[in-house]
Amino acid sequence: MARRCRVCLVLGGGGVRGLAHLGVLQVLERAGIPIDYLVGTSAGSIVGAAYAIKPDAERITARAFEYFSGEEFAASSFSSLLPGSKDPHPGLVQNVINGVRKGIAYSNLLRKASVLPGEKMSEMIACLLPDADFIDTKIPFAVPTLDLKTGEDVLITRKSIRQAVVAGCSIPGVFPPVEYNDRLLVDSGIVCPVPVSAARKEFEPDLLIAVDILNRIEREEEFPHGLDVLLRSETIACSRLNSQEISKADIVIRPEVGQIYWSDFSELDSLVDEGAAAARKQVDEISRLIRRKRRVFKFPRLDPRSIFKAAE
Image (cartoon, rainbow, N blue to C red; front, side):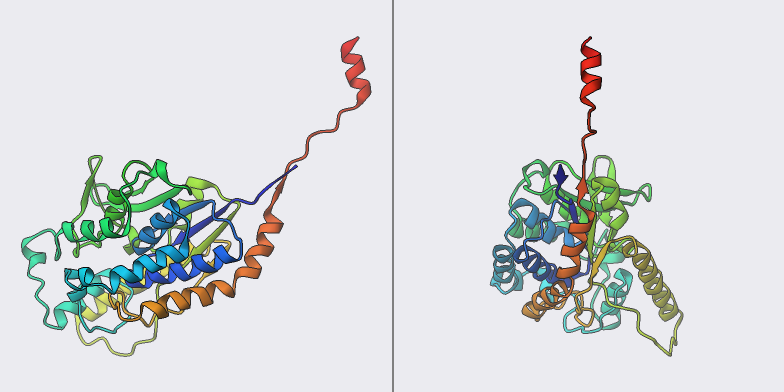
């Protein structure tokens, strides 16, 4: 008696580069590769939540394009956050500092809990996701976050999906922490962009596929200021932590989107296309592993003579 291989898909963080996840989902869906569990960090939590609620990658892609290309998003604070920057730095701290260097006013960091109010994130999530609870999803789903009070990782799997995703997308310094069950939660991407370990512990899948949308570390020659050294160290630390995590996955899909800045919404089509291209390269290997990892359960064969003996 055979049981189908259980597959978990882990969607990493990376700002607008998270749209590459939609291309990955489209390819897996067309190839008939089942997704039994979903875990998403930061931008990955938005895509993961939408797909867990209604697994239709084409529909979700169309809705994302409609929103990010529309007037509602253009009028929001997101469209003006670090405008015009094309530097593909992976670190969250680096993202904020880049804006300071370009003359953008971040005095709110000194006076308030964040650059942008939490309502801005909540409004965007409300536009992209229905008001649903985790129990309403068609695919079991989880959102990793980081508790500022204790330093602990917190995996949210209950109650409001919108609230969980807002917490999972609250980039430290950019958006305020989210109060949740006596915890103060933020985006965990700064310490674990692709949460493979958390996904394995929560769902115990037979096959785990990770999608990594962070860019690789490139060689740099000059670090003229102490701040440059600090930020470079933070970038390296983030990259190493990520490498350790994704090494625990069975399959890693890496869309070539590292050259696109985390808040650059001008290349939506390219992001989805790159995600699809990267997934297509792995489809055959994923199918092979699913066949190999399928668990087969055998019932013990009974000796008919033992049955008669027991009846005597």
